[in-house]
Amino acid sequence: MRSLIVLLPLALLTPACDTQAPSGGQANTAPETAAPATAGKVDRSHKGEAAPTYAFADPEGVKKTIVDHAGRPVLVNLWATWCAPCVKEMPTLEALAKRESGRLDVLTIAQDLDGPAKVVPYFQKAGFTAIEPWSESELQFTTGLGANLPTTILYDRAGKEVWRVAGAMDWTGEEAKALLAEAG
Image (cartoon, rainbow, N blue to C red; front, side, top):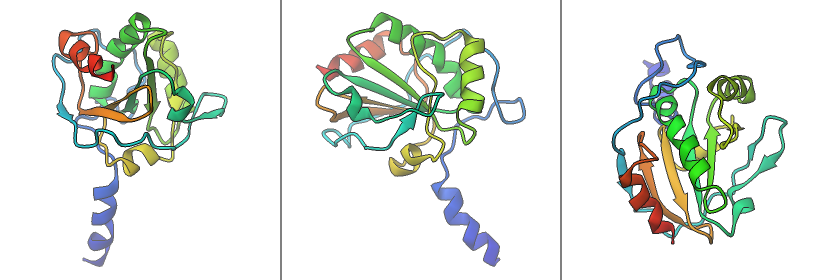
């Protein structure tokens, strides 16, 4: 019973995905082409909060923060290669990044414990070129923001949160366009 009491708080703090990939833990395959139809829940309760200063890294380990992208709106997507809804929405984030290049920074920050070892091969196989394989394997974003996967957060030009979406979304659809227009 004592071990259950110790493990229960850890389980509550661990980020969770709605659906795990069926491949035994890692969805290191090219994503499906069908995108999620609608967003999960849109949450505006954190509107106006400053972006966190947590660092994330590129495949070579060069660290950045959201603040490094000040001056233009930033869409931060927290995801993992083992999260089926995350993998399913990635092609729509790639398409959004291509369409909005120069106007909106799209940061896909993997919450995989293995970091680049899983994320880089996934990006290579999927052929993504407009989004980068950022990683944050210490899980500061998911634990610090209390976010499950996938979660996407829009920050305005000043680095203040506009809204967050919990769950997968088609980032090329009309609902996404309306939400993204809120960045100003």
